[in-house]
Image 1 (cartoon, one colour):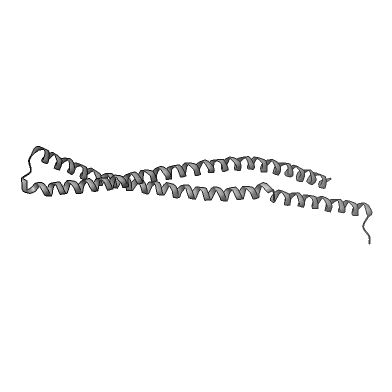
Image 2: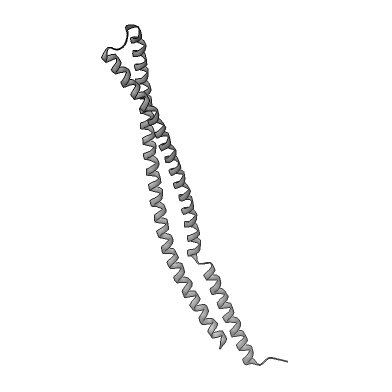
Amino acid sequence: MQADPGAQRALLQVAELDTKVARLRHRRSTLPENAKLAELQATRTKLSEQIVAAQTRRGDAEAEQERVEIDLAPARARLVRNQQKIDAGMIAAKALQPMLDEIEHLRGRIATLEDTQLDIMQQVEDETATSDKLAAERKGIETAMRDLLVQRDKAARELDQQIEGFGEQRKT
């Protein structure tokens, strides 16, 4: 028994429509925007990790800076106190040399701590600049991602409309 030629043509047309729909669905699932979005997302994730690392280093440096400032305060106070005692003549001749030695030691300690403090301040500044630069770069990527999402959604809508059109043709 052979099928009616009209029915065979209709069946072939339905198969052709199904093939077109399958191709469109494949195109929709493999839009180039999706690959680019995945690439940008990976870059964005890496930048976010780098930002966190820079902010952590900055936080560590700020904590170290506070520790140095805490160490500096008593050293400066002791230096001022010792110098005032010497200037007021309140030190016995026997205790003068050890007091002068201590003042010299305190000046060296203060100078070392101040140098450390300057280095740390530079590190804080550098890490802040790094974090800001990376954040600006991430913001640019996020803008590009939003633009790509709009393009992808537009392309997907167009493909969905074509798929829907073929679905309507298939029903008739």
